Image (cartoon, rainbow, N blue to C red; front, side, top):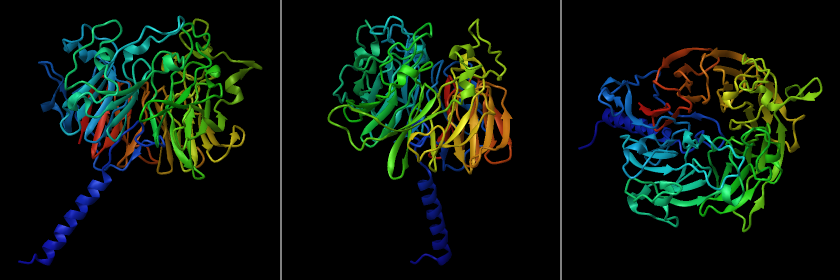
Length: 532
């Protein structure tokens, strides 16, 4: 029996709509979602608002009956600074190890966790404890913020997860965890998770599986300052990442000035493939916390890197993994600090004069302090331009920042020739900007969101959220999602300011919302929401 023409037409329309929905949906497998660092995605049907729910009075997290438009909620820890990522039906996120207190195998809770959840149900599939480190550090090192947990956003490719652990080591994990056995070649997960000087824990099916581990602290003498916070960039067979190398406890000198600020590893083996040899660490103001991005310029892949010396760098990506460790080739460098940010009355301005906590600081924490900062955000590559802002550790307080739009097609020291525009109207910023629809969205630590014209940097609008902001803006489905210390903000993306909703999540949002496969994921310091 033949199908009537109107039925065939209706079926065809349904199939086309379904196909369009499938191809529009995509994973979010790394920090920023894409290698260019630009947090824009093509998801549709995302919410203008949602109800995060109330805490279950009987314990156990959020009472799902009190939520609205929420697919599931997962408990994290007491601190979550890393961003969630989504790939292959799994959701990955770094946090501290508060929930390990519930595991009888661990005598006490200390360090971080990588958690892997089922994307559809929110069920915990596996987790890996990443303990703190005290041994093997230089005497004058200040690596005391390891209690912040895993700050690195997991990068997923195929059946591998790459991230920087609590103690600054680089880990390659099996996406299946121990559920399919200990795959190796690394076989010492029990000792690794237990931590220094403790009896190895017995592995179970819901523990993580380390494939390989590389330790920059041992192999290269790197000494991270405060926390290890870089996320891993995958280019071909190679991994690019910053080392978080930094200054000593008194903040007087770089502990290991000859240690590299950016390194390259073979993704299959973890072997060192290359490192920067331009002396970047000798010029660090505080620490090297930026994550790299990449893009195609004149047919070549460039890796963009924000320096702890306030320079933005472009390195030539390696075509393949060399037999012996090589030096990264520098293509261009751009000084993000104009002279009046570095000198006052002809004298260099001390970096830590801008730290409001110092008794001798002249910073009144009103946003008017003018002095040097570094690059902490990820440089964003878009249409042969790189966008990047400068800032400091938020604990230093407010101060003048600057956002640059750089011509990425030049070579050499391009400070005087590659500036397309710069914008001094924002405070210090550790947020990565977002470029969409001819506009640039940039948040500063003080809590103001700036919307600029991407062509010339002119201001379209500025919205004061009146809450400290560390994360970045996601632009998706005509909306803009941005968390701050007080709430999640949802605005209409575009040249006119329109606030759609403000949502209190019960804790600060220091990460950046993401969207994958038709679902919005938002992490506070304590919980992860999957919102339909």
